[in-house]
Length: 78
Image (cartoon, rainbow, N blue to C red; front, side, top):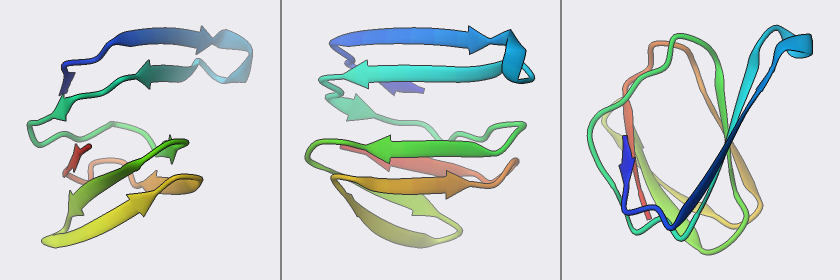
């Protein structure tokens, strides 16, 4: 899971099949291999990040939207 986060906010929208939303700012370090039980969307709105999935490394810039399939193992580093 993400560590070194300056501020987080979490929502659970029951009207949308319990959609979960996490907003994090000032992420310093991300670690651990991670997976989700459901489809996951990630949006980078400032700076860049590195995503590692399926033995490939992707550079993600601001305004990118990332789609991660359920059960795909990944890491993401700021």
